[in-house]
Length: 377
Image 1: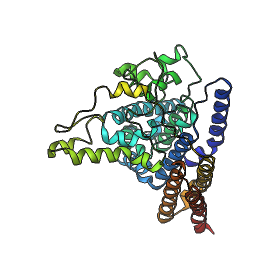
Image 2: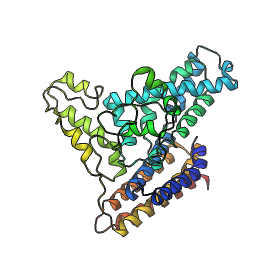
Image 3: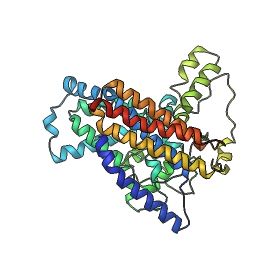
Image 4: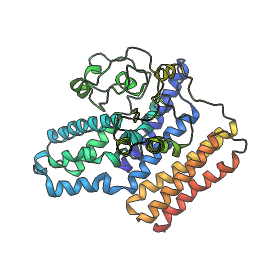
């Protein structure tokens, strides 16, 4: 799976470059340097987590398939069987996605994908690090039905790659396609914080599931993107940790033990008894709030870009060779990646002295190359 994504990366980059050029030419440049780097950094983190959690990515699925499946694997070894695997995966993904908006602990994993206040193709690559780790039980029905591990992985990749093109503001309504498929119009609604758009249009490929289960909304007004409580930070690691920290804060502040236990599983916006309810007008004010986009010096932008490029190169080589590396090497590479991206965040913070974290981040990214190459030398 890592290899396929790496091969697809040049296509993604070309598509983003074209979208940026098209937007500039038509007066809708919706890219921001810091935002784009943060989105792409989340993509690196998500692939790193996948590389060090193979048990939760495919291992448990393969075990269930081998021990508990209800139907023989060969039953699905036809073109129709492969198509049904994609359909079933998309159905399971709808429920995982829906739960991820309705349960705080799942939202903590999923929120990363929604934090960008821009909506462009780089947002599609802003993947969640722990979404698949927490969500693997939702796909075990495919194993019970006898879909092979290869079909499970392929279906997941098809659904993931499909969603790339729907993260754009440059494609309008598409007629009957909007009634059946997840399209840019439908997905803009999903990413918006407009009160009428919240928690709608969960379908990854098909929006039919939303129509069947009452979660569909049409795009009727301009979308405001991001999360209800903005991230307002360029540190990629804090982006991952933000809502987990919020859950911990709520648990600590909640008086009753039973309510403390309920906090992670209730709605992300649930206020436990004994805590002050959120401002009823906050959602309305959110629509008028300016994007988080503090000015950056040329040096800050350049150093952050250099850190990201060095880290991306190191991560790419790691992912290409990840199947050959032992767990300790993988863990070291993951640690270096996290440290380098922390340095990237410091550069984007716009401090007067950005050279120090910049040099440190580049060094960490390049050090990753030595770590992942050493076992093969």
